[in-house]
Image 1: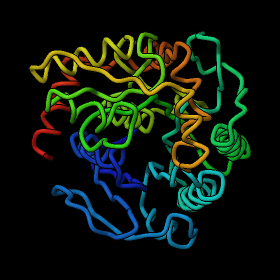
Image 2: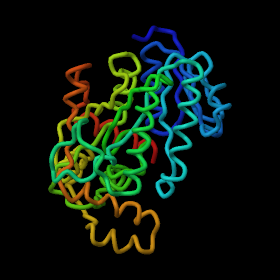
Image 3: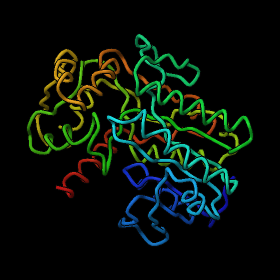
Image 4: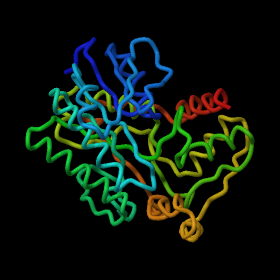
Length: 313
């Protein structure tokens, strides 16, 4: 178990990293958060450092004194195979050098299509996509390092993000900003299929819990999300909270694949379209049984997200 006042170090200051910073501070931890610039509007109790997470010498210095290290870094979506593994290797080296536990933010790409079967942690890594293979290899490397005794690792996995600070996501700015304006939300794939969306504060809470419990080590865990609904039902909730009648425009997979021939970002999205063309349901029973189910109900999470968008403009 973690102790109040101990130092927790976060690499990556995007939406997950910042939400985790606030969660850890609320739990009485000292927090050090690292990004490339060293510039971040952080509350009292959080130390902000500049650092290159791919450089082991830098990460060792950043991790000095840490009890738990969290890897919330991300790589450009079009360059995962080239740029993501070095980020992980650097953070792992820093955590291992100081004997800290390492908690890693992961996603669900490594499983590949399941034919609509709920995603559980015991599924094989059956992906055929380049980003999925990258994630599968990174997860295998983490668990192998744990098994060799190099570093104590826990992996937290979540679905498509939504929440404060989240813009680039299937449930990001193209859904919430139009809802506030009464314009059609743009969604991917087939909106009448169930699809799990993960709320950023719930992700942060789940990662913090993994960092607190040695029982989490050496395993991957699906972080709690609210009960899964269809994308259309999710959009209906967003528009109802925004005070507008729901409007939705779906971007079909065939169009995404066609446009991907000319647009690198859409080309990367095209290989992941299966997630939006079959039921995509994340099962977090394993986490709930071990540590409790803390998922925020969708209406409350959506209201908070809309309020952030109103203030952000």
